[in-house]
Image 1: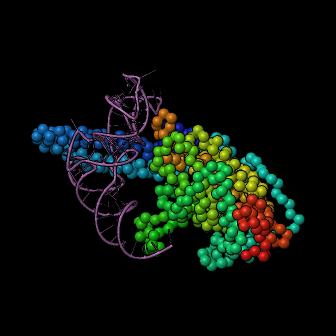
Image 2: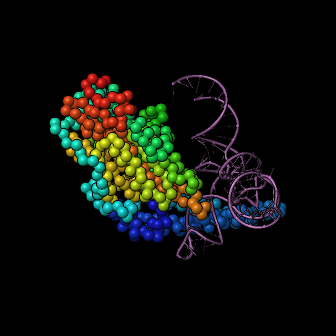
Image 3: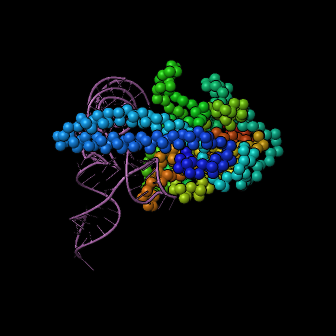
Length: 438
RNA sequence: GGAGAGAUGGCCGAGUGGUCGAAGGCGCUCCCCUGCUAAGGGAGUAUGGGGUUUAUAGCCUCAUCGAGGGUUCGAAUCCCUCUCUCUCCGCCA
């Protein structure tokens, strides 16, 4: 959420910046609502002040044993007028809030301007992709060839965009998670967090997934009620689309002390996304699933440190790929490709030989005060006054996609897959997946 | 799911219709006093919004005692609904 004060005083400039990300701010309706709001709010508060004063004087008069009937008739219609004004004020403020909640964050000045992913800017590469002297397979062929990856069964159990992993592939998936958590807690000083997978709508609103992106999420109703009317009114949960939501919302409605900062959390969770808008994309394989695991990094920092923290956060995610010896590149997302809440985002893209391209495996964003403002997440600054925090998040990494990268980059001519050295201790010393492992 | 109890400022805790945004204590901040063993005295110490303003200074003002609604000139206090916490029972990993 943007600061309403900034919209009141600097609207033209804000609109210009928002236009960079193809968002057109509803200037006319905002201005007219603001004018209404100001008039109604001033009027309402005048009435409230009058009511308070009169009520006080009644109290005093009664204490003295004086007659108050005259004063009472004087304020007979005050209550009705006030109630009416308060209702109007609430309506206007709700409408304003509705507008504000759907406005994306302002991109940082260092973000390249562009309209889609082709305008993203590469800033570095690590390792050259390996060259193969045999016909390479994609991760689906490899996994199914080994008998360890089973989409057919998953479809029977749930439907499209789910998977079943078995044996040492499932083990490798678990090993990856373990390795990532260990790296971030031991090398990068993150505190491990275990968090709910079902969350309420306030949490989703806090990080910016609601109200605008409800279609991308899965809602869960207690008791599995099929009565749609009951569903709408009953309290319900959402499956988390990313651990960013529960972890970041831990500081919702809190005032931290400056010496608590920075907070650094790492959490491993499954993530659930309906991806309503992306049917037809990546229909094959593990790349785009309704359920996938992710190790997420979240930092809650002092506003002056957030860009420094972003660089560190990216390097923490990169460290995983470096240790796994997987080639990748780091991209700065352009204004048109950034997520709703982000002021600046780096994507890390891993090399996938079968696709002959780099694919996103981590997205690291500085949301500045955008989420903190929605969440009322603050800290007490040096002067003792409350200030909004800055929040950052990044994948470190998406586990399923990392698995894909390993299968494809570490594949051998005979259909087996070597296990990256760093993971072997997590795999009971197994050095490769082949026809003999189960 | 059943029965009961509760929710007040950073914490503890008073307050059952009227100068209550809220006594008292603890903690914290600043000042004073005292050169001697965790002493004493004083002051301050919630958050958010609006108006005014160059100003996130000052001044004026509104709201908030779990949340929402109601009664009333006036609600922390009365009524209703909900949420959460605790205790006991049931069920359960």
